[in-house]
Image 1: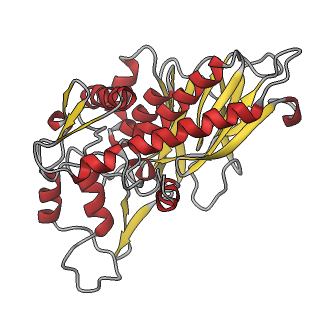
Image 2 (image 1 turned 45 degrees about the horizontal axis):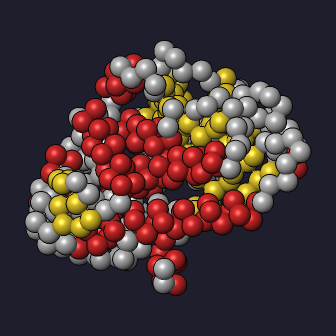
Length: 357
């Protein structure tokens, strides 16, 4: 990987769907003294990762070897799926002409197939082909008078971009990803970070550990129990702007052999003439959503699923989102809704969270 590519890969989740559906940083709570664990940390996907291991009795782990494997795995994911690595597989696909194809890895194919699955389940609220809309909203109105001042894109700009959007336009043939329209572009960042967590989770398991936690940028998957032989406790922040992660915790989720991802729209927004526009773009309409959902926390078996569903639930109405969650036995969710300057909470029937003051 070139120096430039390495620099750009640090921006993997920035200015992408997952930046639009901003993932909150999760605080790990009540796990005893940190020095009792084996912690392995480093940069990952534009953010950072933490691997927290409960030591095996009588073992002397080679943490340098584990870290080396982790870092090479993350670099491989970036080389396949980062839109900020100029020669990644996804970047090369986005540059292709109509009807051209690129051969992708089996891992990349799994991510795309799972993306299509959640696109279908959410009726298009989750859609990895919405990058043209992301770009047109980031750029703003093309013919605005003052280029340094952002303005919302015109209806025509949105319509042109939206014509290239649609998960049903994704075409796979074996391990070939085929571009069906010249302007088609994909961005898997709203699911790839979860996939990264799952990938590292399997890697750590291959080293013989049974009790551990994997976290990338606030998205978490845990195995077994913590060092106190209790469920891992994950704190979820209040969706407040201008606060640091862990500064004000709303509730605590206890996890055993589960994943958790939280997404929201309160930190990032566009502004024009004193009106705020959400960074969350509805792929179905092409427009910034107007929603009072401040954040959604999702618990699932895999982090890839938690990641994708948290993204979709930020786009969908509360009632539509609840219906999807209740119809999926392996998914639970917790919504924070902003109403007249205060918060109310809604949770699915199987969601367990201990709310603080």
